[in-house]
Structures are given as structure tokens and as C-alpha cells.
Image (tube, rainbow, N blue to C red; front, top):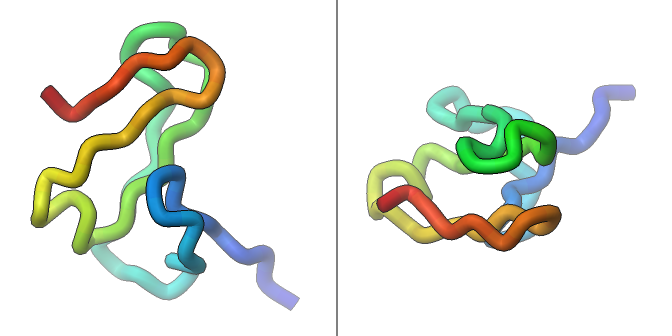
Length: 57
């Protein structure tokens, strides 16, 4: 059984989202940030749960 991958922002399952990305927080470098292709396209803000950094701008 495949592990579910959840978006950091929406908490939706994005396991099969081809355009989804995962990267470490640009500020703390620790917490993984997961974004769906829709969130990337719409430039939806995310917040690091560890340090509070808000991106993408």
C-alpha cells in the first residue's frame, strides 16, 4: 500500500499529483514543504510548521 502524501497547506492527498513538489523550508532547512500542482500554479502561500516562514514570496 502506497503512503499518502499530504499538501502542507490544504492537507489534501496529492499522492498522484504529477506536478506536486516537496522541498525543505528555505529558512530553517528542516521541515519538508509539500505543494500540489494547483497550489504552485495559483501561488498559494504556505507556512512552515516549524519556524513560521511564509512563502512563496
